[in-house]
Length: 310
Image (cartoon, rainbow, N blue to C red; front, side, top):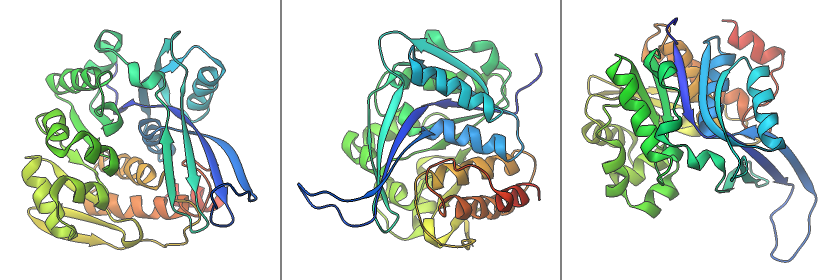
């Protein structure tokens, strides 16, 4: 079997995106937008690496339902090679995403089929031929699917592959406890760590980006730290020195999926040989386009196509 450049493992979920034109009042009514869009952090990253030119595989679990059928169709349309396990007992994942009038988002995640992936259901031959595996924290907050994610990491590493990890979300880290979260993730030998500032603060207790990055490097020995700073761009820690990457723009309409698009764009360039700084610059440019649109995976327009063709 030909080696696979990139594989993402974890959650595919449908986002019910609710965007209001004004602040919500308890018991009140308002006009806004209600849109069904594809999402799930791991699936988002897979789609963005594919959009950015890297042939990508995705491993996950869906329900035996209409949303599961639509998930297959969506990944196929995005050029992502999928390895989806069907679950007859649980529905395909869904998330309620509330976007306020300032563009900031809050989420309520359902406990869908993506949370029930088992080690026995992993496509081992695919993983044994994967050069790079991307994991997200949504596969580690509960077990299952934690055991499956850890087993997948071990399979890829044993075959000589590398790992990247996104530790979102900060609230879930705080709910399960920092020590418990670190016990489940810090021993994996992660090569690339891609937190945002809030997640970095939750894990380290620091609010200063360079200090966050330095402390994360101690918590995850050997990992390249790429700290997403939202409106402030990103920070790359190289040989102990922080390098600030300025944002491409900050015209915020909807922050949903900004971090995933950054991660996908970063990985697509980094795994092709660009430096971490060059890859982060590209990630910031793609994320800047995403936040100007609704949803985690807006339909590409001419401006994005021009950006991706660089």
